[in-house]
Image (cartoon, rainbow over all chains, first blue to last red; front, side, top):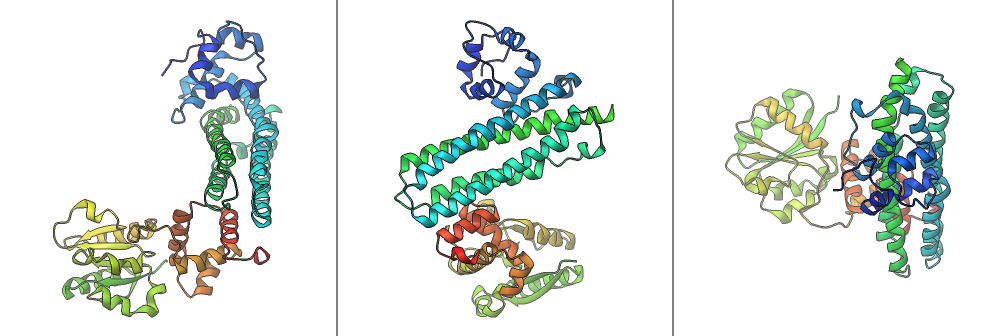
Length: 223
Length: 191
């Protein structure tokens, strides 16, 4: 494993961990990087390199949990900014993109499979959008308006994510097990690759909310 | 308080009656049937859907064919001799004839909470009863309503649902509904 260091070149970081590319994309960090370091890139684009590296670390290693030493109160605003950007990334890119791959498969399927899977996916997207919207309204906006309430600390993050995780897995199971033979394997595999990518990203997102956002919100409320 | 409905299959009368006494005394279980062989248990077909847990003598665990009939129900093995841990791994819990009353009651709770591994038949096909439960889940019935409709206990419904999830790999009710329709278990008009 290549050690993460703000002094490393941006290209070295991407080359070692290509799965981090989507972070650049969702934060709107523009290419080219030339030969600049992560520190220089963060300074250029107005991000904290400490937080950027922390988010990278949590993306690379799902089991990594930051301790209080890694978290400082001034991270709250930027973390919410990152989470909002991730929500947009899901809603504007990942979900429609995955939906298009599903439609490609369904074009080869019978009417019943088409209607059932389309409806299931539409409900799935609606469920994610509802959760993300609720989170933005009840949690992020209150923090941004500096309004505190005990409800913010008790805001349920885990159950909605668990439900979404179940449904994400269900899409994969249905595509593998239930679609008729006419659905081409190549299209199925492409769709599955996307759905697993989405599942893993949602799990990382949940981890960032659970282990980074929640302690920051608790500090904010108890200040 | 939840009362588990128990079947005991134990050739040694003194052991069977001892477990019956312990379970009855704890107030959380009702022994609905105490047999000495699996064949005798199979003859009680009428109560099959009414049993939450089975206490089974370790001397009978090699009868895989007979056990496959009961793969939707958690089994607690009653050990009276040495057994390899590998042979016991597929069961929900294990107690010994030297276990205390508390240990036996605890094992009953553990077994009730353990998802069933369909290892006997090594099959991922849904059983007839699991299909019945799946259809009702897809039609929007609650566990209580399914139990009432199929005349089984809510705990048995939960066991069937765990098996359905394990076998289909699908966890959400919406996903199970799609599964049921695409596998022609139910018409899309029925949901």
